[in-house]
Amino acid sequence: MKTRITELLGIKYPIIQGGMQWLSRAELAAAVSNAGGLGVITAATHETKQDLVREIRKTRELTDKPFGVNISMLPEVGPKDKTPAYIEAVIEEKVPVVETSGRSPEEFVPFLKQAGIKLLHKVPAVRFAQKAERIGADAVIIVGFECGGHPGMDDVTTLILVPKAVDSVSIPVIAGGGIADARGFVAALALGAEGVVMGTRFIATKECPAHPKFKEWMVQARETDTTIIQRSIRNAARVIKNSAAEKVLEMETRGASLEELLTVISGRVGRRALFEGDIEGGTFAMGQCVGLINEIKTVKEVIEEIVGSAEAVLTRLQKIWA
Image 1: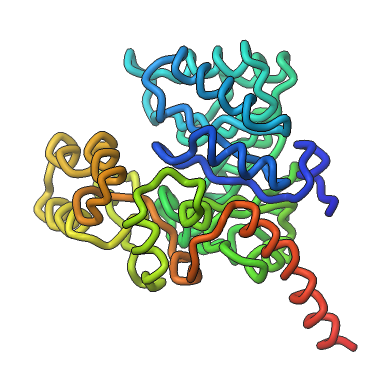
Image 2: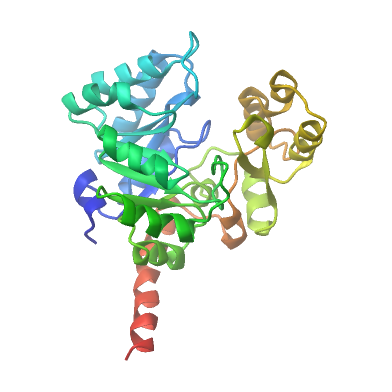
């Protein structure tokens, strides 16, 4: 397989693992990289720069392949913003790829370029993809309304966003949102993407540290078992449709403040529930493609099945025009 993304990142397959807080740890990232994709560890999972450095070094012990670090930047710069420290860590440790999201990474681009680090910036809208190109990102990840986590406020699907982004920028476009199997993978490439990012599908793998109860829930879930919360604070998030999400929606309806919402949506609340297997106890990012997941597999099996089955999809398409 050869696309601009495999060439840019030095990977075998144009499949990137999403940066998922608490879950994108060394074991999962290394498994993805060893299987031919690009594994990603999440900076926000770590309290300090040194904690992130240790996770980077642990990942290196588990794989000799390229991997990346996701740095999700807060919309506002403040004293609690750890982004500068995380950037220092990836530069000092010579991490080959950084994925940023949230606010613009423009102030950090010169430092990343100087260190030879490839920058992928993740956005939910075409106008932000164009900005990413202007500030010097090497590639842009665009995620549609289907995605788990933060799909933006525009409610536009991956099917529309990807070709629009491809037509609007010259840097490689990576598609995210709704992709969990070979059909979605081939479709993304057909839309003009040079690769895909998958988060939800990699949660339902044996290497993912999520509690087994979450993985079992995913296998039974339907495509309608997620919902959008946090619109009231302009930070829309697609999460599991559970008691916590319903509580947030009720709070938003009555105009709850951010402080009130944080008692339910706080990452620390979600982390405890995630690792204890409390499905109802917190809000958890999850894409609509959960309805396509029927089995918990190893990361290697997931990637090999996608790549292997892609041939069958292409053969079917060829027969249509035969």
